[in-house]
Amino acid sequence: MRLNAINNIIFIGFMGSGKSRIGQELSIKLNKKFIDVDSIIETRENMKIIDIFKTQGETYFRNLEKNFADEIKNSIQNSIIAVGGGFPINIKNIIELGYIIYLDIDFDYMIESLSKVKGEIEKRPLLQNLDIARNLYNNRRNIYEDIANMKIEIKSRNIDEVVSEILTNLEKSL
Image (tube, rainbow, N blue to C red; front, side, top):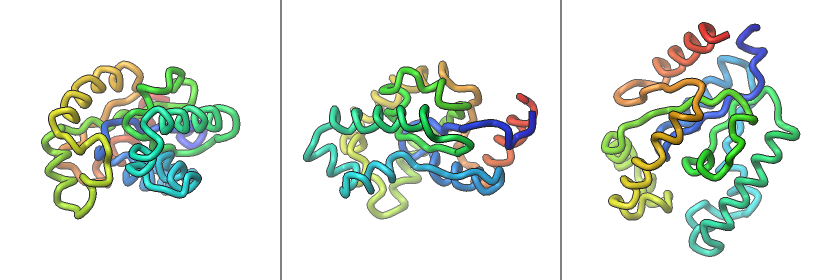
């Protein structure tokens, strides 16, 4: 099987781990379509994720994710898909959607990195209280690891290094 023969590749990980940026770069390398689930939800709802949480609530948002998971399963193929940090917790059958790559980022490193970019912390509803966010991070790590086909450490690495490691690991696993 060739790399391009892999159907969907799903990036999971905590918010701020680089799923979208790394997914976009990998999509270019593999000549696959890139899909960012959160961006599509924002476009469809005509509001930012933080505003969906504020006005409609987290349950409403999680239902939107479930609906999109059904779309992936039924009609999206040969794509690189970045999902939100809670998606794998909310979607019990995520392994049916594609090959799962977990981007593992250290919590403190993630906060430090996001803090360098104006508005990055503020736009993430579940980072508004860092103590709660750290507990959420700790609770999700094992879930991410359990469902992942591949785990990639992110700390202090540039996108090219991460994408190169992913490509190497994909070639070995096929």
